[in-house]
Image 1 (cartoon, one colour):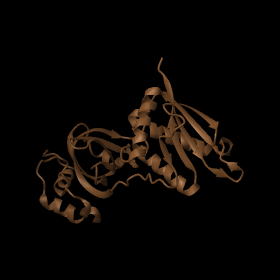
Image 2: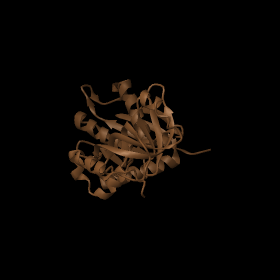
Image 3: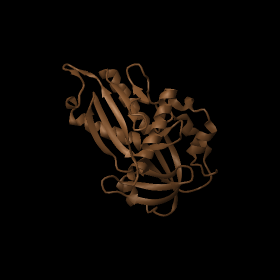
Image 4: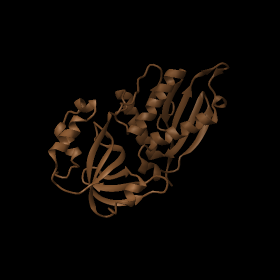
Length: 259
């Protein structure tokens, strides 16, 4: 049988009647905490889909929130968060987990409460503390508006409430692009190699794409019109100046076909 450990998140604070106690916590706050902790423990979607059972218990002593997890998970989480405290940065964490710590830090600034995180490996000595003097602020991602070409095989079209298509590209892997029902009805592009002209957002640090919308279909061709590329550059946002590796950026715009 798998051994069980726990993660302990203690919330300390004051109320008009004295120290914060479990009875002072509204169910909406508890629900939000449960969601935050799940994201903190399993920040990647694939992890959450296959995560082990996590049970919950609250106890007196300010507000002690116990989350019972497999012992191995508790040990790994302790090591990771201990390093976060040692380096005083959330850069080591997945973005979703870093956002949780950032969120708690902002709450601390507003409420004056303190978050103490310990575990079954060291229940009496917190390995991470978030208080009004700490500055665990998640790095803000640099997303810019862009338009670019994607080339690849369209392997899925449709959608009941929201219409979209899915394209498999060499550079970005599987990408979802929002499209109108009219665009999809008249396309007949399923399971063929096509070009897409899309607009959306791209992260300057990672190159990841999000919120993509189809502008038009393009015939697939390895030849590029440099005048079109020049026009794209000229009409790019003011954030263009923040791009350090412009050659790599142009390769992204071209869809990475030549790589």
